[in-house]
Length: 209
Image (cartoon, rainbow, N blue to C red; front, side, top):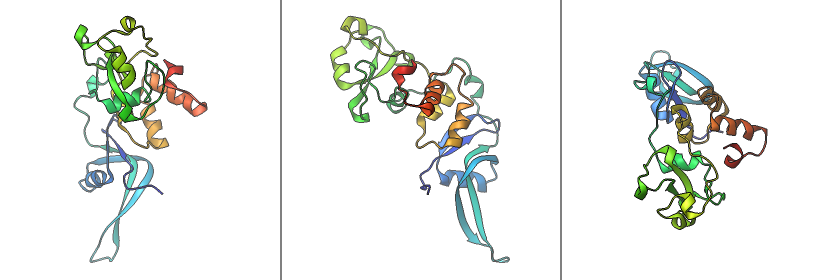
């Protein structure tokens, strides 16, 4: 049975993924008439008040994916030269909680954001210059490049697309939501390849980059 914290994927009317929302926000959009269409399985049947004339009770179905009116104002930017906001949560998920120096997987609290080209040497805080590192490896590397520290970088950092960033923000993504998101991933996407291979068997970040 699904819990009430199962997220709903919100898209614009063109089907561009926008964000994850809770069931309360989904119901509000439905009641306000802002949902143009819905896709995927019905997650919830929420019961409202009783109609005084008919004696029937209002039931609002909430689907896994809801498309709302209008298009995303930045949709034109999502296909070229787009960089989503950088956060440790999304970064660690991009790298599957794997330290890209020692290759071990860690809990969130044991990880840190490492700048491949250190800030002290002119590096910038962007997706293409940051990787997940355990705190031990990050401390050892310090303000040096991997080459200067004699440490091998195990995978090349990449900038997620908008749809990939939405995926990275998700929790307990359902099969129909995942299928919808994958349709918006680039064909060359590292995440697409990783997810496809994980369905066929064991696959890790280090196998796909």
